[in-house]
Structures are given as C-alpha cells and as structure tokens.
Length: 363
Image (cartoon, rainbow, N blue to C red):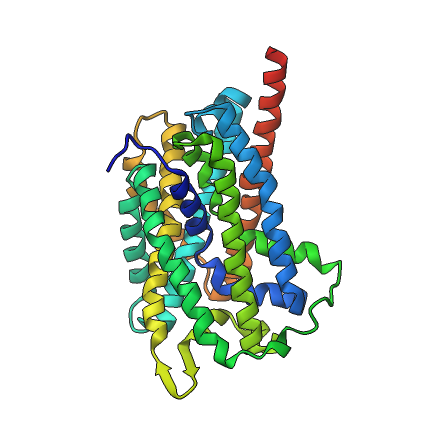
C-alpha cells in the first residue's frame, strides 16, 4: 500500500481535480453570471486556459529539482531568508483558505442539513476529521483523491440527468453577447475557483512517471473546467439569468427539489450533500497537509504531522471572524484571492525565472 510514498499519474490527476472542486463550485455560477451574464461560460473557459501557464511553470520546476518539494528547493533558488518570507505568505494563504472553506462548509451544512447544530461544532468537527488525513503522507492523500474522484463524476452525471427534464435552453441565449471589459473581472472570479491545484508543488517531488506529469496536470485542469462549465450551463438553463444572479448556491437550490416526468423526487439533496462533504474533505485535506509541510520547512523539522493539530484553533478562529456569510465572501474571499495571486502566479514565476537564470549561468 505504501509504495515508498510515491504518487502515480492517475493520482496526480485526481488530486488536482478534487483539490480544485470544493466550495467554489457552489457559488461560481452565480458569481460569474453576475459579472458576465449569459456569457459566463466564456470566463470559465478562459479562466481554465489562464491556469495552464502556471501549471507548466510548476511542472518545469519539478523537473529541474526532481525529488524535492517547492518549499525545499525554493531556499536554494532565492536564499533562505527571502524564501522564508515567501513560505510565511504561503502559510497565511493556506490558513485563510482553510478558514474560508470550512466557514462556507459550515454555513451550507447548517442551512441544508443541521439547522439546530451550532456553527462552531460543525466547523470544529470538520477540521478535526480533516486533520487526520492532513497528518498522513502525500501518497495517502493522493489515494484518497483517487477514491473520491468517482463520487465527483457520479454527482455531475446525476446533476445532469435530473436537470435535463426541466431545462430551458432559451435561457442560454444570447450566447455571444460579450462585453470585453467584463472578461478580466469574470476570469479573476473563475481563477479563484481553481485554487488548490498548487498541491502539485509538493506532489511532483513524489511522482512515479515524471515524463507524463505535465500531461496529467493539464488533464486535471481540463476535467475541472468541464465540470464547471456543465454546472454553469445547467444552473442558467434551469433558473434563468435573473434568478441565477440572486442565488448564493444555485446548484444546491436546484437539487433541493427535482421533478422528473411522471413522478416527484424529494430529499435527494441530502444524499448529494453527504457526497459533497467527502469532496470538501478532499479539498481541505491537501491544504491542511501543505500548511503542516510549510511549518516543517520553516522550522527545519523532518516531519510535518505534529504541526497539523495546532493549526486547528487558528483556522477555526479565523473562520469565525466574519459576522455574516456576505462578509465571508466579500472580505475573506478577497483576501484569499490576493494571496492566491502571490502563491500561484507571482512566487512560482519568480522562483522559475531565477532558477533558469542560475541554470544558464552555471553552463
């Protein structure tokens, strides 16, 4: 089972998909529709394409420093002091990201399943459960992702099949009414829904087949984009653009009542919510694991597992700071976006450029 802590290409692909799809898929359709209207599908497509250059950079860094994780070879590239600053920003990013995810998770569970359960209990329970997988190694996390991936596929298929009878395809029109000025804003919103794939900065150090790692990474983003596109098209086809803009979690609203020809199905949202809990678990697990790895790198320890549990009260405290759900999305969401730009775009690009310069200088 252990395989000497190695990650297969299938596991890498599953890891990218499961870490990207979590709470973001709930609000993405309404967020992108609010900015770009019926052409929100274009922002999702362009957002997926915009991720690819940074996937390429991360994979190239993995090839240049094979067998080492980003938080180790980064010290070699830009120096220990500078990279400790980078690592500290990464740590803050993952702490705030986890706080955002678990707060939205808690709000959804409280609204749809456990309305009498205190929010603090839901958040703490999820963090405690997530810490279990977060204390494991990368291979265990990758195997978990491979197990949960079929659940995501099944949910997507069920979502499509149960929505088809009541879809109104005229709601998709006009398809190409595009305002060029709205595209950057739409893409930035979509970009936030892809965060999580940066787990490959660690996973690539343990990859079994490094030659096909880039292809599998691209495939992971491709399948994530397809799922986001399907979700957007179904929600807009079901609700219409005006109703979609008003919804916070449109996909959950659709699944709360599903009407099929000849009979009526109720409470299917409960079953799907149970599956969604596993998906969020698969999103939070790698993030809390990465937080432990960063702390291990900062304090120069061999293991990361004893850093995971102390992060729980910090994450929980951060998650309870916003007084309302609107503040979670407006304030905490924006903080995560800015930190994500540094963690996904700026820092890897700087490390890559400096690494290339050092490589050419040594030739």
